[in-house]
Image (cartoon, rainbow, N blue to C red; front, side):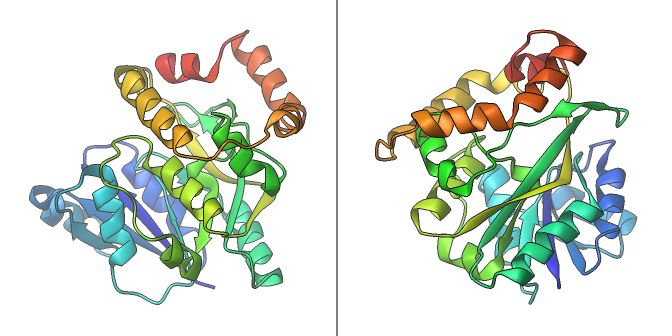
Length: 259
């Protein structure tokens, strides 16, 4: 089973080598880096085994579209940041779920939060019931984590391309469109990826993120979400307890601000 992994990068992340190494541990993975044209030659020289594409206009999501559109016959596709990591056992569990259900269009799993040194900070809360995904999004809750989500490429083709007008919430828009379009999702109870937190990585763009997320939520039809919220909270009690134990009574946005 082959999987395309897309990473948009400026080329200056000190964690890019670790990201590349993590993808290299995934059997059947083909890693595409998308970078500014001026950085392409240097990045290609540093990572000669990878496909390195020069981005055009469109920011982050334009770069990811370039990765989606690139030639290749991989059966699955995912995208991760240039400082995040994939976890081989979790990716294998996700691919096994696809193999067991040919109608499955996407899987999403658990995602660990790590610091700059790779030490565990906690975990992102995710829904354990796929039927709750769209009601939760419509209710303003992000119920799955982008680095831990994998699409069958045929399903991704039905969803189409990312909306480049978004700067920060293009992933949420993509997931919402996939769910509205009938793509079948399944939760995989395994650590699929690790998301690296840096101090201040969200705070400088927090207002823009809130505005974009609100725009997506407002575009969805109202859905009953009360029971979905309770299931989401109950399923993630261990996640919340670990966060309290490690960091006190803080919200996710505070962790994003302070790393």
